[in-house]
Image 1 (cartoon, rainbow, N blue to C red):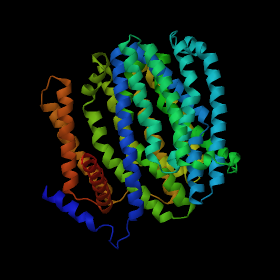
Image 2: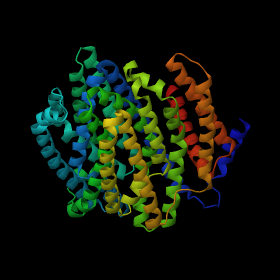
Image 3: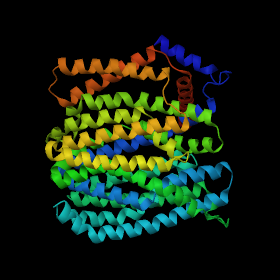
Image 4: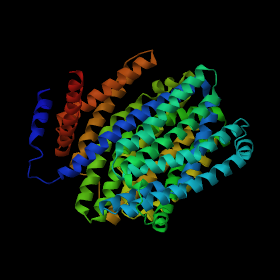
Length: 528
């Protein structure tokens, strides 16, 4: 405790320091925006995880697998409909905001809304028309037909929701972005599904809740858009840059689509080679494994517009330092949770019910693969926001083809475990290629001596947790999971703090302490 107190006291003099190894303004920006994004991601992902646990327990592996197939197909359809415009909106609106060019900001958002509305309406009509063929001929699941048709209705609303939330991100209003894209739709979906289950509507309630939450969230997105940018409703004449927007966005469309396909190909091909129950068990494991990247995703939200701005102003040294900060924090925050998922996977799968225990190995494989994803930092936004989206597009397509090949090879023999292996290998290849390209093209590398601290702490915590898992006999799965989590996290934090905090860590703690004091101060004022 004395060491921690000393670290906290030493924070006070940070902002007056003459040392400029890490620009304070940049650290504070990432800390402030990343903290809001982290809170939104954590709250949204927890609500969403509770929803999926509820779905798994009430529906069982079979019907839950039908729901998972439907959401997988809808996610891919949404990605097509977006035309990559989310990245385009973030890049160009952040750029024009830095230039104080409101006319082009308005032109960008109007172009993105119109293009995405047209494309999503076309995609919804196509999916509705071919839903029977997809369900019967490809997946051999007749009940999937009506699920896809109802989901298709929600596509335009979810697309509009994502475009408006990306606009909020471009203005660094991460609070609005998280509300529209994470917290609000997850909460509404959970509330509607819970009510439907109480009334006896099982799969019908799950599908209906998904669509209605998307419709309401799209309306909220437009409300925030008008608040952030009042000129949207003014008589200001927009200057359209639709051609430039599409030129940037289309490659990122296929990049995003390739990454999404890589994420959902396993479920789709499991549905083809296996059955809905296999998909349900795999999807439950994936919900846990893929959600553990919330810290990286939170940092990316504030990081992306900052990269665009710094690169546009040719501040390359600051860009390099920003990348190092983001990578270290993403790794440091994510490491204990991913290790927990990998080591205590069997206990965690019991959250969904005893019939999902078979997905324990799947969860361990996905969690270990995500360690490589998180450990290499936000490589995708760095390439895309610096105009290297075409190269990243080639990365995505190449790895997607490899991923499909791995799935065809491994699923017939190993089933769900084979799908997890295919996903894991694909993730490692994808991010290794990006890491090499960033070093060659931008002369940026995310690692220095400070990166060793979380790695050492993670290694010690892993050894302690494995020994506990092997030597301690606890029958109740939930007691084992809870005990293991607190042991792993405690060991990790003790080792990390014992090695000392770096300058940017102190800045973050200072801003966090400042924020907590502000909240507590407001609370005391409201009570008086």
